Length: 222
Ligand code: PCA
Image 1: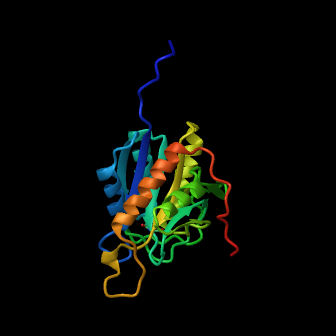
Image 2 (image 1 turned 135 degrees about the vertical axis):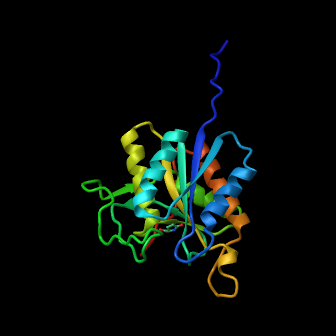
Image 3 (image 1 turned 90 degrees about the vertical axis):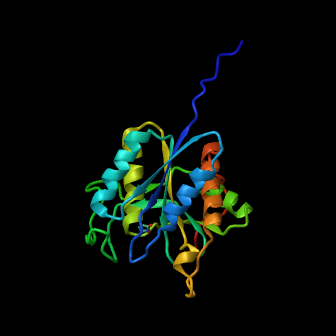
């Protein structure tokens, strides 16, 4: 007889953000909740909403990690103006805010972790995820900069904390476009929330099934 297989489902933590920059919704959180509502896969999914605040998001992320002990963490944020899903590959050790955060704080050219590495790479299979999303007919690409605002801040702290914990948990960041409610009557691009939910579900499934990323074209010339 073979040894019994432990019946422990992997845990996936998804995070979204509260609204910011004058918006009343943030599609990242709407979509994350949609993923959880529809999920019936072989993993335990948990979600947390993070504040758009440089001083508060790190502690909120730390609490979420302590409470959920995830195997995989996928943080999600809004990238207004994007036309598709962006699988972020690089988090840099820099806060340089173009606008104040939701507490009025606007750090300029400050390290996120003084003395920390200049950058971390996502440890999710970003190219495989792009392929999986593309197979659903939803636009997606690998992105090599998550910016220098609150999303990059959380992404960097996530990768820093996961590396320091040393448990082998994997993580990354996904940017989504505006939702249709944010662009009505404008020429700003948006994506239906249902497409975001399908795309993020594909990211979760790909992360669960794929440890070694696809070696396919996905770089950027500029
Ligand atoms: N998007 C912002 C911060 C919160 C969010 O949803 C960003 O891209 O930095």
